[in-house]
Image (tube, rainbow, N blue to C red; front, side, top):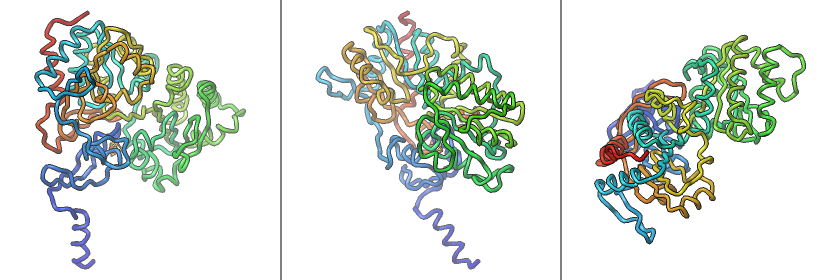
Length: 440
Ligand code: SF4
């Protein structure tokens, strides 16, 4: 190869002028991809490699749901005036007012907490405990049933790397991986070679079980279900695998064949199970299905987690002595929140107002429920909030520990400088000001 072409190749990789920053961790979703290469210039990221469009938005300090990265950072704390206009205030005033709001509330309700560091989650959980607060984790629809199921079902995980190497049958139940964790299929599960699948996706069989057809269908077989028959189908499939039945419904035929001839099966479960009429039973049945498959061939069940450190939140509950499967304070579905007079809402690392039903938002307004948003980015919740406290964007402007969807701890590194506090510091400042005067 002539020297010239080597130089061109090198230049192409570092075509923008700046300082290379290799192997950054993306705080975009539960894949926590740690292979992101960046080029920095003047405290800005001017080039990114390997990242998907969600991650790209994060590294440009914007929302992951946008097609194009758009800067959406909050700049200073605000308090909403009676007219509805946000008035800039100091951090000190923001912390003091938040402490009074939480102290005076009859019931404190925490939303989110799945997109921050483990340290911030540990701190938040002590505050939840101290205030006898209710907590609606942003991944509660998936992980609260998952942790409840673990009370009666054995655990058993595999790393994403093991799935890449070994799995030749992949089942996506109630999840569109392209939308929940965009690089899961490219990096770990489908379009990548492994010991048992050297021909990449050609050597794997992929199925998705969902009421509707979606773009997962471009590389997998759709098995339709309805919210009414989903549990029956999971039970039926378990029975067929367990008993080796010859009477197999046509829609399950290929799936059963594929499971029975596969050296390793990956069963991925997503938030979609919440739309079944019986999500808890469905989750438990999917664990039973995994056990039945496991008697014949190794199989793992993994939750597909969109919010990058949702597992960290559940680990922090356990470390704080809270059993997420039995605690009446840990809720599953955000949509089950019933606003009451005397509530105060505090949102950290999430945008619950994007998900809440119109009638919930109307009730929050009409009951004058104060809302505190601790957030890096502008969103629907910060627009609705009484107090907004801007913080550094976790994983880009601050370092810290997070847990990948398979439970592997990944340490996120700080890429950009900021003068803003971390959400951990904001929580500590609020807790200090509440002191020992918790309502309860
Ligand atoms: S798949 Fe997730 S972690 Fe990986 S680059 Fe995309 S958003 Fe980031």
